[in-house]
Image (cartoon, rainbow, N blue to C red; front, side):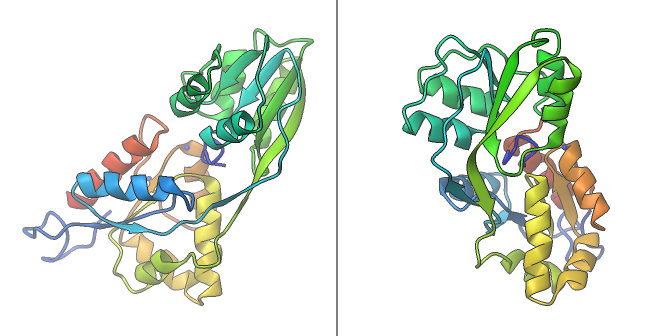
Length: 265
């Protein structure tokens, strides 16, 4: 769902009150990390960059209790998935373990596992490219959320593998989500940092529930809209959002820096 399954950006207002136009005002930046310690860490990071964070959790994690099945290759697409599997006592054993990016890999190593594959591009397409020459004729277990991209399974099949999928957790929208949508609708939000396609969808759904969907989209037209990678940017564009910033690295720190830089120009 991020492009890293949880875990592929945009402008500031014109005028004397716009950030960087002779004003020292800190730009307000909405962030949509899951409703746990990650939203707190993201808000603290934005504040360290000189922004006024607007934490608005658009994701809640509901574990299913499942663990990855045994297979010659196992793919984990998020830090959350790693932590849930480890907490359940799962171990990759002799399997070739692939993770979608360095944060997921770090979590796996912290669990005591050996990580064999980390793609150069932290996306489903990147995982396929990293595994394509190795998996023909083998089963590949993909363990992730219920919102994983079809790109990964389809790409593995095209490479001659037999992919299976285990849903480790479901991603839902917290009922209280939507403060940032109201701020955007009122023209009081300088930037938004979308960290997955699902955060885009949940933002717009929360805006619709509050009766401000069209106004929120219009408000974001005058703000900086950041997307963590190409898939997220494509989802935003498909739903009427103009994306201004997409960082080279699909990591939150890179997204936050790019969005804050654009909002303060």
